[in-house]
Image 1: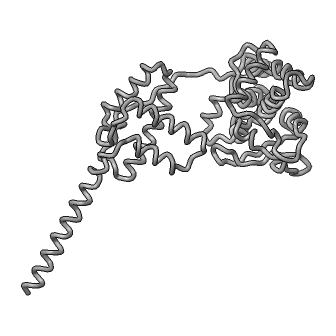
Image 2 (image 1 turned 90 degrees about the horizontal axis):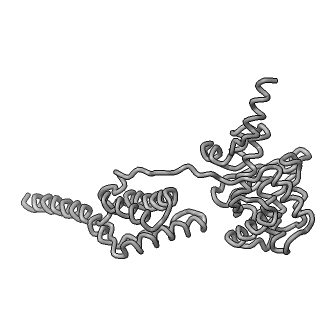
Image 3 (image 1 turned 135 degrees about the horizontal axis):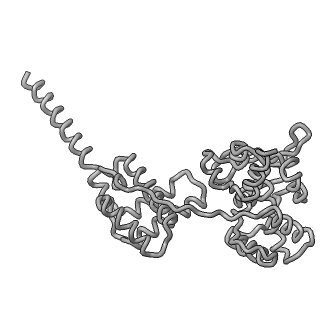
Length: 309
């Protein structure tokens, strides 16, 4: 009986010690340097490589702010000070909010892994300012088409200009235009469709090339491999697009992404429902599409005229 009693007491003590160890483990983890852990978490995150680099950039900002920051130092006050520091570095509201959201993403990972005891972002609220996304008008798009048709500019500029046009006609992102392959063009019911999985979101998009913009995208296809082999990296392509815009006297701050906005804006002007545009662009949320699709003065005038026919 004494032996049984001693065994029960031993089991109770073992259970008490195990609970104590489990309770102490998170506190030990909180002594870990935050940036070291965050960079490891970024490496194992299931995100696109460009997104991963953006997340690493956020970790670099945190390291510049405080390289000795530990998990146990993460408090609502620290979050507030870091946000203020980003603003003091000259970053605009939307850029600051983007960095803070990335920071919060990995705080949530640490919370899920029980490495933090409380959420340092519990008092933080995101802020944003409305932005004006640039888009070409149909007249400006025709000028761009004419420039390409005349073979103006260097070979590198022609490639960037044609890729930009393809994005205007299809709504594809830069990463998708760079990856699109001849095999992604399929025949469905005697019509040519572009069917591919987007690089960023992995969402499948289906674009009726034969009908969109009168089939102009098909005229840009002259290869059986990647459609735009040798397209420069995004930053270089943006430089070329700005150079071409200057030659065409288009006084807008253009980037490759403006082609995607141009596609949505022209579709809106031509009466395509916003839900259809959402599907074509591969957006999960219609609010994202609404941010892309500009309602221009000409669209308003066209709709008002239709109401009084």
